[in-house]
Image (cartoon, rainbow over all chains, first blue to last red; front, side):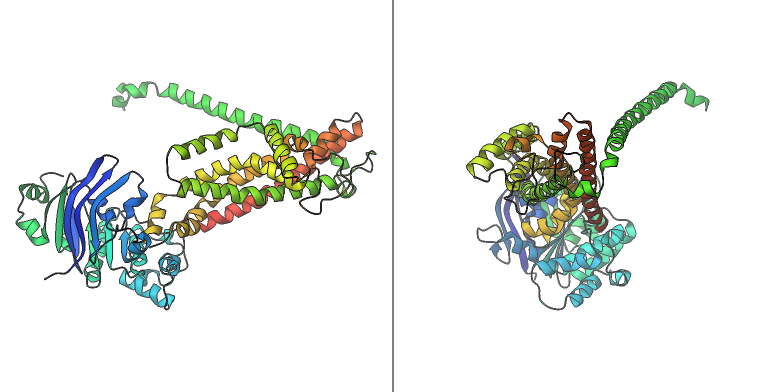
Length: 250
Length: 293
């Protein structure tokens, strides 16, 4: 039986007046890959960003409900959002490495958070886990912007891993990548889920089916169906889910 | 090919090409007009002042005899004034821009401040001179000192620095900030390590423009009473001073021809100081750009 690491309870998120997510309740199981799928504008990215308080940078956004991380509401007063984001990392849709060296990209997060231990070891470990080490080990000092898109995205994953987060949120991490780079990152997810909990938003249903253990289907801000991926894709309980996963709309 | 000719949009192609050629010519003409006017001015000034520009001119104090007159006190006064202004105005302006862009909540107050800063950038410099006279010279009892002048100049150029720095900070992509925050960084760490380095080239451009303006301003300094005859070099921020444009203004308003030539030589010195200063700033900007922030 799975253990839960995060939980959204009656989460409603608004931009101004219009709700982007309505009354969403779902449990994120530990050391699993949970996929959130749905048509564009269904609120899936918005919900994902609520899991590490990234919506706070959008001035018009507001949230009701609770998001629990190991039983604690991360929106409680007295909870430092910086601490939340340190333990719940995020990889974005478009690769966004810092315009600095490859090494600095990975070492910056641990450095500003005062991590102890050998930085060199941490750098190598993170790059190896992100399956990037062999490609960059001879040019760690060169700019991250010289890497290909797929390499940049793996560098962003390495950067997140170097923080040793407990949960990694991924917001359509492959949408800007070619099929080969995508396959690279999907393979990576199988390795990563042994140690980390992953929540991935994707508009690519094949990808959700391939990589995830659980799938949540959203439409117009409402959680339509949530269950084991196999079940959601082969025996959906809701008609609308079936129509979506079989490609009849969206 | 026959199919193409029938197409409606293809029919007016020659006319569009002509319009393009006319537009291009107009743009080139304007550019060259500006350049030529500048060159004409420079040539005129250089021909008038070049023969007076020597070591004696640079190392002497003003005099009533043109042969013995020099620009030393004005040159040092300008260097003192502009560096003090930079020390005051750059941190303040960049700090204000960071606050307004990264920290302040968007609202009526922030809009009000923004509009006011934009308006301040357009206020005539003499008004700042009056303000400086009342506040710094008289109220704070700074007298007609370098510091009073620099503070007045800082007021004058702060809006320019703030506006340019805000634009530069706003142009830093949000994805960079998000990447930083997602790694558990605080607002200040994000600003310090990512936003500022990326915005530095744009900020430097604003600083160059602002200081270039300050170095050439005369009116506010005349207003606060920067002396026109100073026979010493300021040794501290509380000493009296004069500046290059004031000295030039003083010489050109005299009847003797030789003093007009001295004025031209003073302009050349001012231009050289400006050029050196801006080259330095551009080098800093260039380095920041090469590092990619």
